Amino acid sequence: MKTVLITGANRGIGLEFTKQYAEAGYTVFATTRTPLESAELNALAKKLGNIKILSLDITDEKQIAGIKSMLNGQAIDILIANAGYYGPKDERSQFGQIDQVEWLKTLEINTIAPLKFAEAMIDNVLLGQERKIAFLSSKMGSMADNGSGGSYIYRSSKAALNAVSKSLAVDLAEYDVKVVALHPGWVQTDMGGPNALINTTASVTGLRKVVDKLTAKTSGGFYAYDGQSIPW
Image 1 (cartoon, one colour):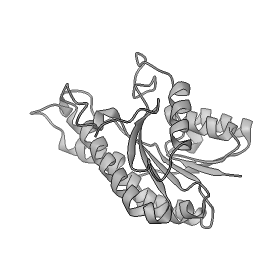
Image 2 (cartoon, one colour):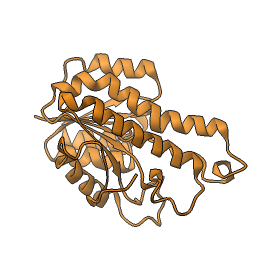
Image 3 (cartoon, rainbow, N blue to C red):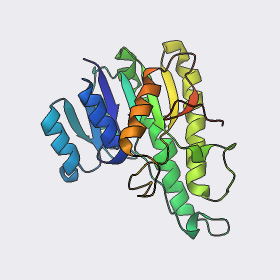
């Protein structure tokens, strides 16, 4: 049975990833900072039976080490770094009023932590058959797509994540590990808001197709949920 490890699995896109992969027959290791408070995830795990919930704050090195130790020798076919943070949506992310503390926090969660987690879990990925790592990015990290400016904090964190994803694809190519940065679309989640264009089902269904089709040739790319390549 194939396995997938998903961070930030308690709600939104992460929860939908967990649901779809579990229904597809994967063993799912689903992480959340608050397992006891993740009612929907716990209900899903109880219903399906092939979901294992793990406690993890993606920025906590000791907790990452704990996950690494717990899963020692466990093959992970697909690693999905989904956990993320938007940061302030008000004037604290605008020119002249940037909140440096929030900027550093956002970079830590969205850029540094996913790479450190991939470093910790690489031995598990190498034991897997698929050997795939997917980072949940955003079109807001695209330089070419930025026509509106602003949102310095979130944009820069996702642009940096894209650079991480590309470098990792190059560095791990010799081990047949495929890496991809994903844009989920504007999704109806706590982060995306109720006015977003698509729901989590449509987004994750598309994202899974992108991951499924990922090859050595397309590794290092930046793709939207509909399969379209996004310019850097």
